[in-house]
Each structure stands twice: as C-alpha cells, then as structure tokens.
Image 1 (cartoon, helix red, strand yellow):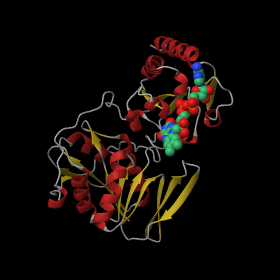
Image 2 (tube, protein in one colour; image 1 turned 90 degrees about the vertical axis):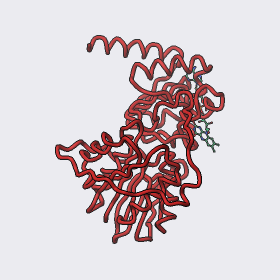
Image 3 (cartoon, rainbow, N blue to C red; image 1 turned 60 degrees about the horizontal axis):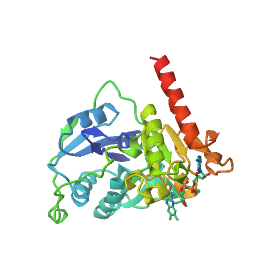
Image 4 (cartoon, helix red, strand yellow; image 1 turned 30 degrees about the horizontal axis):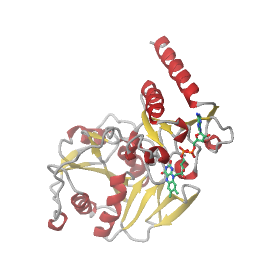
Length: 320
Ligand SMILES: Cc1cc2nc3c(=O)[nH]c(=O)nc-3n(C[C@H](O)[C@H](O)[C@H](O)COP(=O)(O)OP(=O)(O)OC[C@H]3O[C@@H](n4cnc5c(N)ncnc54)[C@H](O)[C@@H]3O)c2cc1C
C-alpha cells in the first residue's frame, strides 16, 4: 500500500494533527510519503522530513488557496498512491470527499483507525456521538481518508531527514473559478483548539460572560492552555463559535481537558471523550461528566478555579 499524507501548515509550521498522519501511514504503508502545498513551507517540510516520511513533496502555490484548488492539486498528487490521508480538521473534512470524487476513490471522514485487509483500506470511525464505532471497508482500489486528531501519536523526530523535492503541480482550470481575496480572522481565532495540549472548557455553569472569561481564562493561562466552550456558551456569545467543542463543534483530544460548569451532555462529550486526562468541576455530584472524568471536583467553579489557579502558580514558582 502506497500512502501519501497531506501535511497542513499554519503560520509556517505543520499542524500537530497532520504530523500524526505519518504514524498511521508508516504503520500500514510500504511507502509513507508526505505532501505540503502553499508558500513558505521550508520549515514545515523539514519537520515532516524528520518525522519518518519516505519522501516529502512540496507544491509551491502562491496566495490563499481555495478548497477547490487544494483538492485539485491533492487529487493530481494522489494519482500515484493507493491512499491519501488528511487530518479531520474543518478543512480536511471538507476536501476529503472532494479529492475522492476527483479520483473516483472511496472515502471516509473522521476515522480513528486505518488498516489494510486484502489490499483494501479498512477504517474505524465513531458514530452516534461516539457511542458506537463503525467499521467500514472501502471497496475501491484508491481511498481518501481523514483521521481524527489524537488517534495516532505524533512521530518522534528522527536523526536522518527524508529527501524534500519540489513537485510541479497547479490547480486545474475549473478549480480556479473563485479566489480568496482576504481572510479576516475572527477575534480570538489565533489558536487551533484541535492542536492544544491543554483545553479549559467552560459551560453554562460559569454563570456570566465575565466569570467565564476571567476564570477559564486564568486557568488556561496558568496551564499554558486555551479556552474552549460548550454550546450554550457559544449561543450566549461569550466566545467565538470557533471554540465550541462537541458534535457540532471541534473534536479535541488534548493531554488535559478541564470541564468547568459543564454537565457532560452526549453532544459535548463526543467532542472531548478522547482527551488523555479529564478533570471535571461541577457543583452537582450527579453530573454525567463525572462518569468519564479521571478526576472530579464537586464544588462551585467560582470558588474552586481561583484556588486551583493560586495553587498552580505557587507550585510553578517553587519549581522555579
Ligand atoms: C444537534 C445538537 C448538537 C449539539 N452540539 C453540541 C456541541 O457541539 N457542543 C456542546 O457543548 N453542546 C452541543 N449540544 C448541546 C448539548 O445537548 C447540551 O445542551 C450542552 O452541551 C450543555 O452545555 P453545558 O454543559 O454548558 O450546560 P448545562 O447542561 O446547562 O450544564 C451546566 C452545568 O453546570 C453546573 N453548574 C451550574 N452552576 C455551577 C457552579 N457555580 N459551579 C459548578 N458547576 C455549576 C450544573 O450542575 C450543570 O451540570 C448540541 C445539541 C444538539 C441537539
């Protein structure tokens, strides 16, 4: 099986979840190559090259690429491969079926495991808010699959770097009917929630926008993490929609998730249940979030969070 992993780049660096694709690619592929598309990709290409890719191809493309243009380039590059892997980010999930359509390939989005059986790709993916897992066998010779962040470990950097080569590809004419003129980042859209190692999620139990911002913000700051939220918080416009965690938001798997005043509804839990360590703070000891928490704190967020922040600060100071 020849596997190509699309390494998505933000601010010149590969997003963590896309490097994880190389672990999956190496596990199942005789060939595990990487491709990057865009401009200013030298550093990101080197990172992929050191993370075990067989070969790294760089397609230079100026300016901001539309999804159609990116799909067109990836489809041409993937012609030579049996399987193209993408990260199941918003972009990845959008272009996976587009690339598959161009290649006449079978596709699956948001999978948590990829394997090969009788030369064909088999995937495992969560369904019904993560309450069931579905095994899909892709019947076509080629497959395009997006993989949920955190499903595979990020590969360790190796001493020797793979060769990096330029690939002369451009989007086909019919993929250039629209162009991106400008991208205006929403306020607070500077962090990639899916890449964060620590996520402090606030829920309706935070009470007010001010408490949500100051308390969740302080806890996230002291831990070097980012703030996420449940849907009622988004609906109340306490923070940008890009921070929503859950079924209709982002799927995250940080090393540490702290849920503050969040009940643990299945639609929220399906977006964070793969977090490596889960702490829940809730005043209701019957709250469902405690069923999946590694550590539960029964108490008022307004009392517990300031104590936690102070304690963490003290520990950090004493450790120098
Ligand atoms: C189709 C669909 C898609 C959805 N998608 C999402 C999604 O992507 N993400 C998402 O989050 N939700 C989603 N929802 C909504 C979901 O069903 C829940 O309504 C939501 O997750 C509840 O958010 P919450 O836990 O913040 O609020 P609540 O369920 O109201 O829970 C608040 C919690 O805070 C606790 N609390 C209150 N005051 C305090 C205090 N002072 N100290 C400590 N604890 C306190 C309470 O005990 C309670 O457990 C979706 C729903 C539908 C129907």
